Amino acid sequence: MLNKNLQKKVGWIELITGCMFAGKTEEFIRRLRRHSYAKRNVIAFKPIMDDRYSVDKISSHSGTQLESYPVKNSLEIIKKINELDKTKKIDVIGIDEIQFFDEGVVNLVQEFADKGIIVIVNGLDKDFKCEPFKNVDQLLVQAEFVDKLLAICHSCGSNANRTQRIVNGKPAAANEPIILVSGEEQYEARCRHCYIRPK
Image 1: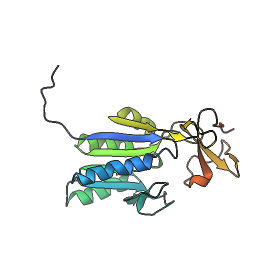
Image 2: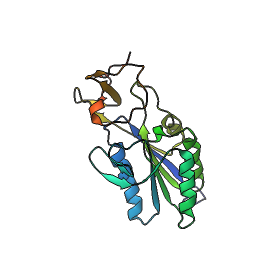
Image 3: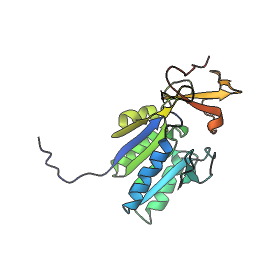
Image 4: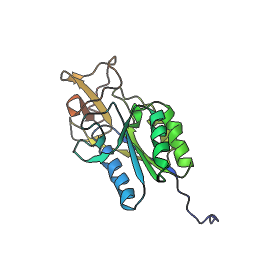
């Protein structure tokens, strides 16, 4: 049946997810830049705790960067949006590493999309114990578009969808903290068969 509402409505959620080293941040930056090229007003946020490569830029492992606002929580995102929206309407919001934010960010993302804003987020789907990561698990069922990217297994070269945390050359124990922001020297992408579940 033909949809009688022929005018396209703007406002949706795009989720880019997968394990570490799958290219999530590269894809995230590419999409936000594409909207910028189309003269849309784009704003990006990153968790202030993620300062591996830059304090105020979203950075991929390969060095691609994008200007962003580092924030502590979802309340700071709202505050910054309200401040910036006074001067120019915001068309696209990007949120990097959404698993590091408080759980209020999920409702916030939905509110933005409901108001006609395109929201693009990225984050790990599983922690190093292979358990669902907060916020991403909820957005999987809320997003209109979900892309799950695969990495290459550091051990065998197969498709990888798990993140192995390495401590002193060995897989991390189950009692290690869930959130530990670091670079590639402490994490590896692993396939189903090479991944070692923490004990």
